[in-house]
Length: 260
Image (cartoon, rainbow, N blue to C red):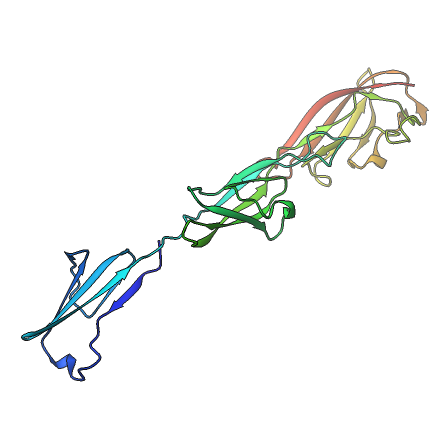
């Protein structure tokens, strides 16, 4: 709504007006209003008339009021996951769209206090494509040049995801040593609480275990100082999610094929 204004019909040229039998009648577009004092509050456009009667004397005045309504604003929250889905390319994040209330002839300018959207600052749409959490704001200006600001507070909530290669060539030099060790990659799982990687031989014997998901703490393909033969090795990954609603323990059984 527009800002309420006060229409004031106080008499200025009679010093003892408070002691006189004054009668005020207010009208809006010729409709009598219930107010009977020397002021009224309004937030509606219209042609306002006040009649003041003191005994046999009367006077009237008119005010044509135009009140421009501000745009409708919303202050909302949203939860999305932006984590990359490809463990080999962490630069490609998931994207999502946020929106504010839209209306004909509105214009929009988005900004954020803590998210990188500089290339989108001049967006004139009621929606915005984002790939980071943060506080997003849209300055909305309507056809009569009244402005207000809507907000969308976005937090990141993701289900945990872990990835391992299907094939592992211990100490392989063909990839520059990138996969010299077998380790777990992923997003939104705790690196310090509840993680373990266990690898077994064909008889179910644990031949490797670590509680550290860092690449340098991964399996080098050996057991007891000896290289393990070519073949498939079962493994169990235990981990905890780090987002609200997913902060519980997960357990996955996978396998890796060792090449020499």
